Image 1 (tube, rainbow, N blue to C red):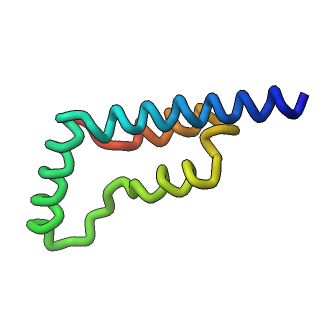
Image 2: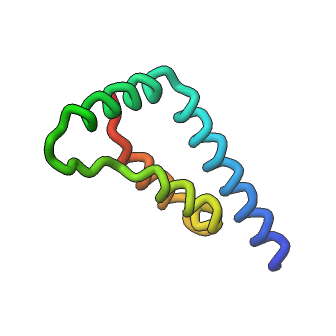
Length: 81
């Protein structure tokens, strides 16, 4: 029973990693990074943007393997367009 659970967690983690890699490789993501970089340097106030470290630490901790819906929630917080 534990082995099936571990397989499910590993499969969920792999799916989340694949989705994240698709996002990071996309042209729109590169454009977003470019815009945010310019915006941050022109912004006199402290503007808070999504912290990609959240996704990174949750990946490393295995949170998404146990809660794949959390990954989708975090991806929705990433600004797009």
